[in-house]
Image 1: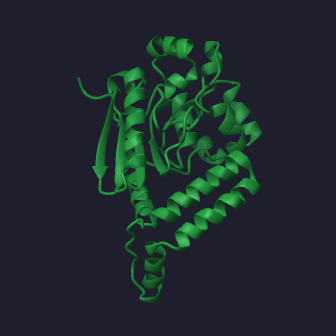
Image 2 (image 1 turned 30 degrees about the vertical axis):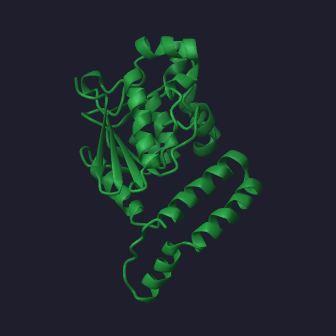
Length: 261
């Protein structure tokens, strides 16, 4: 049997692919576990600087395989989504991965697809993508972060428009409300996400991870906590070898080569 999630290194970028195309990449328990393990590899390997999340085949994901995952969530609670892993891909029931994730999405992108997009840092969509948060039409409610992140990031009305109606929306609407950052032709979305991930990976790792961490502190705890956190992050970055390299590359008019130290 093929793995439910593929993991491939592309230099400093980790490619993570949902791999149940015959099921429209519906995510079962094995896929959830494999996805969390892939995020752990991304977070803990010092040679990796950015991740790309995508779906094999024509669709990103039809959502959770509720026949299998539903009973587990009913018995264990929504924390079953992360399975007690070090990093929660949804960033709700456990810590978020400390490195950026660029997500590429196409075709059907229902329920957890939106929540993984909200947990990612940059999202590239193919034209023709079909988003839908349909839990309220099944008698439940979203539990992978949509109720918390969407109102803050997309605006209350924009969030409630798709959370409460369970209606489908496409790439143009997703771009308008800020769920995705770029829309490209079908088949180009993964390549564009990889290009953006490699662009992130070229930057100073301490700067990138510090920026990401500080923005998350602001989102979770507000400006006061973010200011205190920023002081520590900035001090660490300013004292790094990469900061010296950054200054030298500017003076010498060349591209910087960062080592993450």
